[in-house]
Length: 120
Image (cartoon, rainbow, N blue to C red; front, side):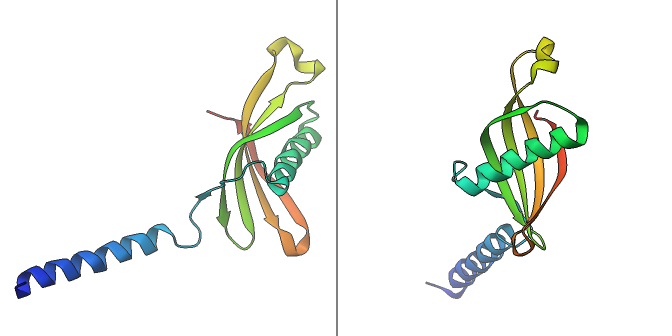
């Protein structure tokens, strides 16, 4: 190989490693691979329960459909949860999906619902 080819290969290797390290740095959202994990289900149930308390609603948690996590002075969970509407909302009918963001600080045994809205 000549020097130019070696330089191009080396430059490609360096740039690709920089790209990978930027994509995986702390603070970015990462998919949750096991949404049936008991802790993830617990976070989903907490989100629905807390929403119900704050809004005097009657949603019933069904399941976590998908989710992502983010490490930020604790862990943010952005979950898509399925919930059945309670009797008081029966006219709207059935099961709907919601996007819930929960911030957890496990060392303090603390969870906080930061967002809860219909999923798009």
